[in-house]
Amino acid sequence: MLELVRLLLPFLLFILSLPIFHFFYKTSISKNPKSSESKTTTFPKPYPIIGHLIAFAQQKSEETFEWLAGHVVSSPSSTFVVHHPFGGQSIYTGHPATVEHILKTNYPIYSKGPQHKAAFRDVFGDSLITINGEPWKFQRQIASHMFTPKSMQNFIENIVDFELNERLIPILSNAAKNRDVIDLQHVLQRFTFDNICLIAFGHDPGYLSPSMPQAKFYDAFDDAVTIAFSRFIAPFPIIWKIRKFFNIGDEKRIRVAIQEIRNYANKIVEQKKQGIHLSEIEDNDLLQRLLKYEELFDEKLIIDIVTTFIFAGRDPTSAGLTWFFWMLHKNKRVETEIIKEIKKIDYNNNSALQQIKAMTYTHASLSETMRLYPPVPMDSRQVARDDILPDGTPVKKGTIVNYIMYAMGRLESLWGPDWAEFRPERWLTEVVSGGGDVGGGGEREWKFESRDPFTYPVFNAGPRSCLGKEMAYFQMKRIAAGILKRFVVVPTAEEGFEPVFLAGLTSKMQGGFPVRIMERCLDH
Image (cartoon, rainbow, N blue to C red):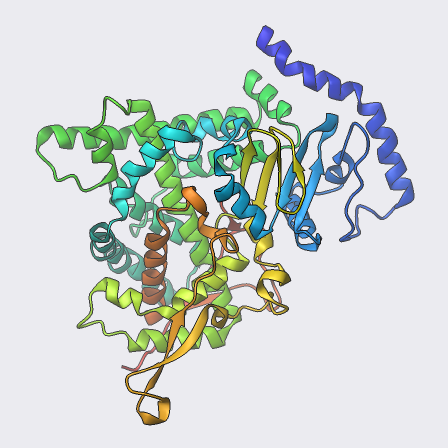
């Protein structure tokens, strides 16, 4: 009962403030009767007590992220302060100095705070996504063994290539033969799901097998992650907490979904335990390594880590590839350059990793895609004590500072007046190799020029930078080459159609990515 009273008290205060909200809302509408239809770059006005509640109420839920990102882009300091009811604040930024400030310079006081944990802990438990400090360091150290050069080579040659040649290519070939329309986003998610389960747990779910099997776990995973993210961005967390207390609405759905996820993850763990008990197996995947530390990782925590790695290995990579193929459709010049690069690859005498490393222009094209359509569109930190950001913005203890990668990719101050253009060359410099200048027998080659991680935090930055960055690039380039070498991907969308960027914990293309597959002829 005391817990219920604690939950309801802020809600009751909000109800009591509704007459004030109604007054300000009517005043706002009377001043601008078309306010709900107009798009403006002027900053919304915060009101006493209710803050920016009116401005949020005037946004459709699916447009709120674009609205916030737009204010970050239009702000002179690339920072937008949102005022919440009863004096609370949150900050949205795209300024590299601020990103560096919270992810590196003042890293000790910016962490995954209580609001983040409350929203995501039911799904990911006490794993890398939700924890801080020494427990986070230890889990990261254990996970880092997945990303050694030897592991990378094994991943590409034995897992990605198997999934590509034995499952993905036959599915695409069959679609081309029968002129079927397939959802490429969904197919890529299945591909990356199989891959992460194989490399991290030694488990093959076979989701990309020709029958494309349905699975409760797969749907439950999407449902749980979507609802958890909606918790995190909710203007009134009290509402979802009340729903959770009474087990109604989305909170009932997420509880059912989480049970399905844990049942599946537990099955993976039990199968691995049986394998370890039956024989001495080489310590070659993350799950086996975790089970060797059973005194430090109880079964619940192991399941938390399994769930987290499934999410991290599936969604960001498939999202990056989905938008990559869309951008190639819109930019045939870039696709032509990538095809030229694929033709030059020596498949007979080079190892898989050497072949992938030779794909410099493809690497730049993927980076350019993720600049405009980042797989993780936004991340956040909560400050443990009062602070001041580099642009002078004061930050009160407990404030959440969000950095929006999606907005950062659209800042003219970072990418120039042609920021909206899909131009992989912005990541490249041209060099001449093989003997002097071009006229003297030299050959033009591309050299990739990376940006600092605080200007381009697509793979995070600072101590929590993504361990799987190189593995993600290797996988995306291998898949891109495998598909483009054989096929042309043709979206079914009508001329002029632009897909909707759906922001969540990771991004998606709203409604999927329906395409037709055509055979490509490459002369060697």
